[in-house]
Image (cartoon, rainbow, N blue to C red):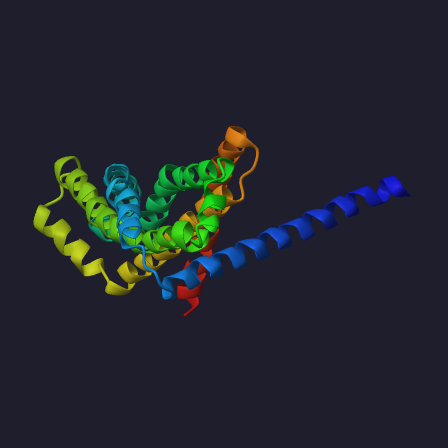
Length: 261
């Protein structure tokens, strides 16, 4: 009888553990967001985080966007040419980039580059007792370490996605004109006719949510890391994996929300 109940015991403990983790993460996020509305404001740290998350992530996001737009142009052309609808390529590229691929790919790239770095930075401070030293100096560690990174993530990701949208459309344009024989004027007209401000705004909203998730998970895993250098490594890995999954999950939820709205 006990052997039969073991799977249910394991399932129950897993569910309770997941709920506990979700609750702790939610409370951690609320504490971090509450710091935005309390003094002091660590402007220099916020600016440093904006540079690290936004500006220094620009090359990898830009390259990803350009090649993604080029691939979409090639693939959509090969499909639409069977139905003599090649003129729709420009519209497909701009819609795919602005609504989905721009925010998702930028989020995944930043999660791999910045999420792990945040977890490693804060994790190293945890295992070397620097966070405890902040508390000793009457400095709130959450406000000093977490709040600037959350704010920077929310602000930097939309900026990156806006750049990715422009470069992704440019990548599709270059391939369509140089390789597929499109008229530049005709392609630009097709792109402009399919470009809607609502699609761009939805993509930017997704980017803000993804930036918040990446910064939150990096801070949370690093803040609660234990076990020296090995624990810091586990925190960095957990941040990248969890952030990537949540980006895809929230992408679906937000898409469904705006699809039914």
